Amino acid sequence: MKEDVAIDLEDLSYYVQDFPRWVKEQRMDESVFSCDSDIRIAHPYPKEDGLWALWADHDCDSYDLLLTIVMD
Image (cartoon, rainbow, N blue to C red):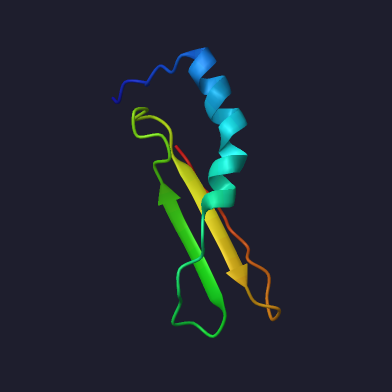
């Protein structure tokens, strides 16, 4: 069984407040599809092993980007 990773509440508050800045810095990579799209899982705060982020974007008028996320 995997042990839970404890995160200091003050640090967690900082990460939550800083997350919008991280999102704004993300850029969509080139795509071979007809509409550009990019989905990735990132580790935005390397010193915190337990924090991961999901980023997704698309640039297409023909469809909506719909994500289903399942987490343990």
